[in-house]
Length: 236
Image (cartoon, rainbow, N blue to C red):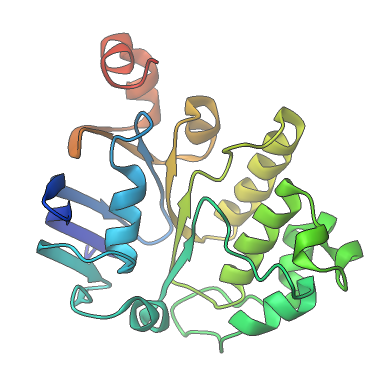
Protein backbone atom coordinates (compact mmCIF):
# COMPACT_ATOMS: atom_id res chain seq x y z
CA UNK A 1 0.00 0.00 0.00
CA UNK A 2 1.34 3.42 -0.97
CA UNK A 3 1.65 5.59 2.15
CA UNK A 4 -0.08 8.94 2.12
CA UNK A 5 3.19 10.53 3.27
CA UNK A 6 6.64 9.08 2.61
CA UNK A 7 9.78 10.88 3.76
CA UNK A 8 13.04 9.36 2.59
CA UNK A 9 16.65 10.18 3.56
CA UNK A 10 15.85 13.79 4.47
CA UNK A 11 18.82 16.04 5.26
CA UNK A 12 18.26 19.63 6.40
CA UNK A 13 20.71 22.36 7.33
CA UNK A 14 20.39 25.70 9.08
CA UNK A 15 23.17 27.61 7.37
CA UNK A 16 26.25 25.42 7.85
CA UNK A 17 24.66 23.45 10.72
CA UNK A 18 23.48 19.96 9.75
CA UNK A 19 20.29 19.36 11.80
CA UNK A 20 18.43 16.44 10.13
CA UNK A 21 20.40 13.35 9.21
CA UNK A 22 18.58 11.08 6.76
CA UNK A 23 15.07 11.14 8.22
CA UNK A 24 12.85 8.26 7.06
CA UNK A 25 9.20 8.05 8.08
CA UNK A 26 5.82 7.31 6.59
CA UNK A 27 2.15 7.83 7.39
CA UNK A 28 -0.63 5.66 6.00
CA UNK A 29 -4.00 7.15 5.11
CA UNK A 30 -6.17 7.36 8.24
CA UNK A 31 -3.24 6.94 10.65
CA UNK A 32 -2.20 9.17 13.51
CA UNK A 33 1.58 9.04 13.75
CA UNK A 34 3.51 10.85 16.46
CA UNK A 35 7.07 12.14 16.30
CA UNK A 36 8.46 12.17 19.83
CA UNK A 37 11.66 13.66 21.18
CA UNK A 38 13.19 16.09 23.59
CA UNK A 39 13.22 19.82 22.98
CA UNK A 40 15.66 20.55 20.15
CA UNK A 41 15.73 16.97 18.87
CA UNK A 42 14.53 17.96 15.39
CA UNK A 43 10.76 17.49 15.55
CA UNK A 44 9.77 20.96 14.39
CA UNK A 45 12.49 21.02 11.73
CA UNK A 46 11.15 17.75 10.35
CA UNK A 47 7.61 19.13 10.05
CA UNK A 48 8.85 22.39 8.53
CA UNK A 49 10.95 20.45 6.01
CA UNK A 50 7.95 18.34 5.02
CA UNK A 51 5.80 21.45 4.65
CA UNK A 52 8.45 23.41 2.74
CA UNK A 53 8.70 26.17 5.33
CA UNK A 54 12.43 25.49 5.30
CA UNK A 55 14.30 23.87 2.42
CA UNK A 56 15.94 20.49 2.80
CA UNK A 57 19.19 19.80 1.00
CA UNK A 58 18.57 16.19 -0.05
CA UNK A 59 15.95 13.50 0.26
CA UNK A 60 12.38 12.93 -0.90
CA UNK A 61 8.94 13.97 0.33
CA UNK A 62 6.06 12.19 -1.39
CA UNK A 63 2.37 12.86 -0.83
CA UNK A 64 0.07 10.10 -2.07
CA UNK A 65 2.88 8.85 -4.31
CA UNK A 66 3.71 12.24 -5.86
CA UNK A 67 7.05 13.93 -5.21
CA UNK A 68 6.31 17.34 -3.66
CA UNK A 69 9.84 18.10 -2.48
CA UNK A 70 10.43 20.80 -5.10
CA UNK A 71 7.16 22.63 -4.43
CA UNK A 72 6.88 25.84 -2.43
CA UNK A 73 4.96 25.63 0.86
CA UNK A 74 1.81 27.19 -0.63
CA UNK A 75 1.90 24.64 -3.44
CA UNK A 76 2.26 21.82 -0.92
CA UNK A 77 -0.79 23.22 0.83
CA UNK A 78 -2.75 23.09 -2.41
CA UNK A 79 -1.48 19.54 -2.95
CA UNK A 80 -3.06 18.47 0.35
CA UNK A 81 -0.78 19.29 3.30
CA UNK A 82 -2.08 21.31 6.22
CA UNK A 83 0.34 22.67 8.82
CA UNK A 84 -0.39 24.00 12.32
CA UNK A 85 2.79 25.47 13.83
CA UNK A 86 3.39 25.55 17.56
CA UNK A 87 2.87 29.33 17.68
CA UNK A 88 -0.46 28.98 15.80
CA UNK A 89 0.10 31.94 13.42
CA UNK A 90 -3.54 32.98 13.41
CA UNK A 91 -4.43 36.43 12.07
CA UNK A 92 -4.69 38.19 15.40
CA UNK A 93 -6.46 41.27 14.03
CA UNK A 94 -9.17 39.21 12.30
CA UNK A 95 -12.20 37.59 13.86
CA UNK A 96 -12.62 33.85 14.26
CA UNK A 97 -14.97 33.86 11.26
CA UNK A 98 -12.53 35.88 9.15
CA UNK A 99 -9.64 33.60 10.09
CA UNK A 100 -11.64 30.60 8.89
CA UNK A 101 -12.63 32.35 5.68
CA UNK A 102 -8.99 33.01 4.74
CA UNK A 103 -8.28 29.27 4.58
CA UNK A 104 -11.47 27.96 2.99
CA UNK A 105 -10.80 25.53 0.16
CA UNK A 106 -13.08 23.30 -1.85
CA UNK A 107 -13.39 19.71 -0.61
CA UNK A 108 -11.01 17.19 -2.15
CA UNK A 109 -12.26 13.89 -3.46
CA UNK A 110 -9.76 12.02 -1.28
CA UNK A 111 -9.98 14.10 1.91
CA UNK A 112 -12.51 15.02 4.59
CA UNK A 113 -15.07 17.72 3.88
CA UNK A 114 -14.73 20.44 6.53
CA UNK A 115 -16.78 23.62 6.75
CA UNK A 116 -17.67 26.12 9.48
CA UNK A 117 -20.42 23.91 10.89
CA UNK A 118 -18.19 20.87 11.22
CA UNK A 119 -15.21 22.72 12.73
CA UNK A 120 -17.49 24.35 15.32
CA UNK A 121 -18.90 20.91 16.06
CA UNK A 122 -15.33 19.71 16.64
CA UNK A 123 -14.39 22.82 18.67
CA UNK A 124 -17.64 24.01 20.28
CA UNK A 125 -15.69 26.38 22.56
CA UNK A 126 -14.92 28.53 19.51
CA UNK A 127 -18.49 29.08 18.33
CA UNK A 128 -19.48 31.68 20.98
CA UNK A 129 -16.42 33.70 19.91
CA UNK A 130 -17.35 33.73 16.21
CA UNK A 131 -17.01 37.51 15.94
CA UNK A 132 -14.14 37.95 18.42
CA UNK A 133 -10.68 38.97 17.22
CA UNK A 134 -7.92 36.41 17.39
CA UNK A 135 -5.89 38.47 19.85
CA UNK A 136 -8.83 38.42 22.31
CA UNK A 137 -8.84 34.61 22.51
CA UNK A 138 -7.11 32.55 25.18
CA UNK A 139 -4.06 30.48 24.28
CA UNK A 140 -6.12 27.30 24.10
CA UNK A 141 -8.76 28.96 21.92
CA UNK A 142 -6.06 30.26 19.58
CA UNK A 143 -4.69 26.71 19.25
CA UNK A 144 -8.19 25.43 18.44
CA UNK A 145 -8.68 28.20 15.89
CA UNK A 146 -5.35 27.40 14.23
CA UNK A 147 -6.37 23.75 13.83
CA UNK A 148 -9.90 24.67 12.69
CA UNK A 149 -8.53 27.11 10.12
CA UNK A 150 -6.22 24.45 8.72
CA UNK A 151 -9.00 21.85 8.60
CA UNK A 152 -11.31 24.14 6.66
CA UNK A 153 -8.72 23.98 3.90
CA UNK A 154 -9.60 20.26 3.67
CA UNK A 155 -6.08 18.80 3.87
CA UNK A 156 -5.32 15.18 3.12
CA UNK A 157 -2.65 15.22 5.84
CA UNK A 158 -2.58 17.41 8.94
CA UNK A 159 0.82 18.31 10.42
CA UNK A 160 0.49 19.37 14.08
CA UNK A 161 3.48 20.81 15.91
CA UNK A 162 3.31 20.39 19.71
CA UNK A 163 -0.50 20.80 20.04
CA UNK A 164 -0.39 20.47 23.86
CA UNK A 165 2.57 22.82 24.43
CA UNK A 166 1.93 25.63 26.91
CA UNK A 167 -1.68 24.67 27.65
CA UNK A 168 -3.17 24.26 31.12
CA UNK A 169 -3.90 20.62 32.10
CA UNK A 170 -7.68 21.04 31.74
CA UNK A 171 -7.22 22.52 28.25
CA UNK A 172 -4.81 19.71 27.31
CA UNK A 173 -7.54 17.21 28.20
CA UNK A 174 -10.02 19.17 26.10
CA UNK A 175 -7.60 19.29 23.17
CA UNK A 176 -7.02 15.54 23.51
CA UNK A 177 -10.77 14.92 23.33
CA UNK A 178 -11.03 17.15 20.24
CA UNK A 179 -8.22 15.30 18.49
CA UNK A 180 -9.74 11.93 19.35
CA UNK A 181 -12.86 13.01 17.47
CA UNK A 182 -10.69 14.17 14.59
CA UNK A 183 -9.05 10.74 14.53
CA UNK A 184 -12.44 9.01 14.59
CA UNK A 185 -13.42 11.02 11.51
CA UNK A 186 -10.49 9.43 9.70
CA UNK A 187 -8.24 12.49 9.44
CA UNK A 188 -4.64 11.50 8.74
CA UNK A 189 -2.30 13.25 11.18
CA UNK A 190 1.44 13.54 11.80
CA UNK A 191 2.07 15.32 15.08
CA UNK A 192 5.16 16.20 17.06
CA UNK A 193 4.97 16.05 20.84
CA UNK A 194 7.00 16.05 24.04
CA UNK A 195 3.99 15.08 26.18
CA UNK A 196 4.19 11.27 26.08
CA UNK A 197 0.81 10.65 27.70
CA UNK A 198 -0.95 12.99 25.30
CA UNK A 199 0.77 11.44 22.29
CA UNK A 200 0.15 7.83 23.29
CA UNK A 201 -3.56 8.51 23.73
CA UNK A 202 -3.77 9.34 20.03
CA UNK A 203 -0.99 7.52 18.19
CA UNK A 204 -1.30 4.47 15.98
CA UNK A 205 2.48 4.45 15.59
CA UNK A 206 5.38 6.39 17.07
CA UNK A 207 8.80 7.55 15.96
CA UNK A 208 11.46 8.95 18.27
CA UNK A 209 13.92 11.51 16.96
CA UNK A 210 17.17 12.38 18.74
CA UNK A 211 19.80 14.80 17.44
CA UNK A 212 18.21 14.84 14.01
CA UNK A 213 18.02 11.07 13.55
CA UNK A 214 15.17 8.58 13.89
CA UNK A 215 16.16 6.29 16.75
CA UNK A 216 12.98 4.27 17.23
CA UNK A 217 9.80 3.23 15.42
CA UNK A 218 7.05 1.13 16.99
CA UNK A 219 3.53 0.79 18.30
CA UNK A 220 2.46 2.77 21.38
CA UNK A 221 2.15 -0.44 23.42
CA UNK A 222 5.71 -1.43 22.49
CA UNK A 223 7.03 1.97 23.53
CA UNK A 224 5.07 1.87 26.79
CA UNK A 225 6.69 -1.48 27.60
CA UNK A 226 10.23 -0.38 26.71
CA UNK A 227 11.54 1.61 29.65
CA UNK A 228 15.10 1.56 28.27
CA UNK A 229 14.08 3.42 25.12
CA UNK A 230 11.97 5.92 27.04
CA UNK A 231 14.82 6.70 29.45
CA UNK A 232 17.37 6.96 26.64
CA UNK A 233 15.45 9.32 24.38
CA UNK A 234 12.48 10.86 26.21
CA UNK A 235 13.44 11.45 29.84
CA UNK A 236 14.48 14.99 30.80
